[in-house]
Image (cartoon, rainbow, N blue to C red; front, side):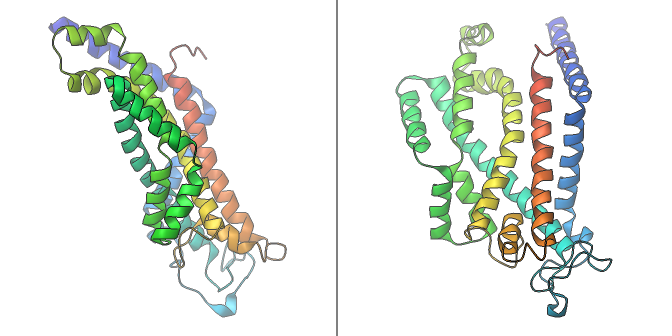
Length: 291
């Protein structure tokens, strides 16, 4: 028994070392990881990094171009644009991670029930997925925002409730695949209960796939939040949002170019970082990759 346990531990260490080696070899993944770390740092310490508060303005300095006094310029009411972008980055990160908590909770729960229990439970889950797929997620989010109001937490709730379909499909599919594997059948044969089999033997094998999905879904959530804010259904003032900053800049962008450029670049940088990390995780976790 001890030797078997030691062999399993050595196997886990070897797999972890192989994963780290593959990930480090992917230069874009490393760059993306650094970008993500910087974005998370900005989100965590926005209060200390921003030159001013996001709601402090001076009308005499409205719409100033970038200068030494305001590196990214100012907005239509004289608020420092660098400060606004730093706080807007925090808003985007909070929304993206908050939405993922909701979507993964719903997706893992429904996918596990349908994929592992099967039978009529799986049929109910499949019907729910089909119904949800037929309704555009952004349309549901817009409807919820119209009912609840325009706050950051309502945006998280609206996008989370409307965006769990992909997580459910992947979790269900993985449970359907793994529950027929030999090690699962062996665990059932020695008397392991359903809960233990599902979360001790199957779910750990799904976590890497969900981690890759998380990395790819974060940029999608940021785009959806920006889309809601762009349509005027996102977060109300004075809380900054990258999408809302782009939306409000449209009337001035030809003259005051900085008002549209910098928030657009920030969205692109965040999206690039998480996408590169997702690519790197996918390649590093694939045992067939020999690069």
